[in-house]
Image 1 (cartoon, one colour):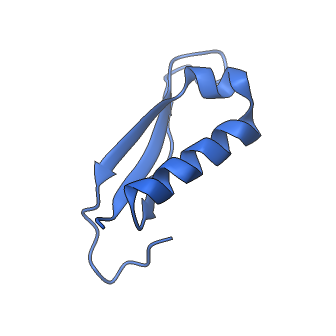
Image 2: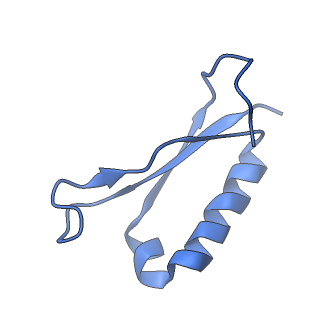
Length: 68
């Protein structure tokens, strides 16, 4: 399995006048990243989940970086 980075972006809004992108989480696999995305969506509610765009990218960290 390959590690991935997970982040999400939110569009311009009253809350985020310039838009916003979350910090990346470095995770052990795409499956783990999808589980985290799903959990965050449940906790944040439908409105927040609807406006977010999720980004899954290959991990480019140093191999010494600890993954979740």
